[in-house]
Amino acid sequence: MFIVNVEAAIYRAGKWLVIKRGKEESHAAGTLALVGGKALNEGAASDILESTIKREVKEEVGVDISGPLHYVHNTSFLAGEDPVVDVVFLCGNVQGEPWVKSPEEVGGVYWMTTEEVLNHPDAPVWTKESIKRAEKVRGTLT
Image (cartoon, rainbow, N blue to C red; front, side, top):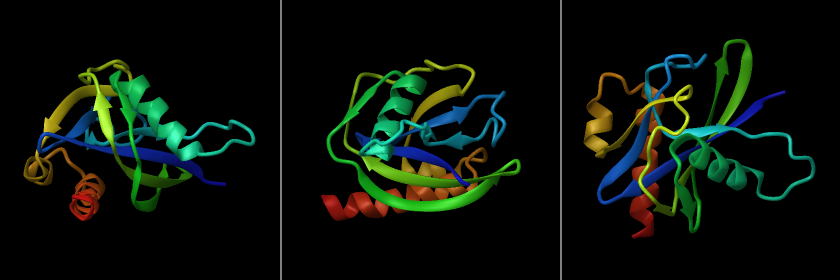
């Protein structure tokens, strides 16, 4: 069975919301990432990916997202021995200013341009790819 993880590609004023993963994270600690997390077992529920992404953004960086969520892409990877399916969504509006609400999960919060993310030494290839793909989706919506 797979763990299902979702990530929020949040764009505002020419920049992406990016976090530095906490030092205690078991997967990719200290790297730059989009905000996100694992889907929980909520029984028979509708729109589980959407509710998960909203919950995780609120829990980790203290802001609410609203408006449509646009599918960007999905990947799979191993977190230790656990197989993970990761789904990235381009998110609508963000209300509030993000901050490190969950310091065990988030080591820093940044607004970065696409170029800054792509050239940052702490941005892993998968974060760069998600930003590139989210930029393409964003371009189709404007």
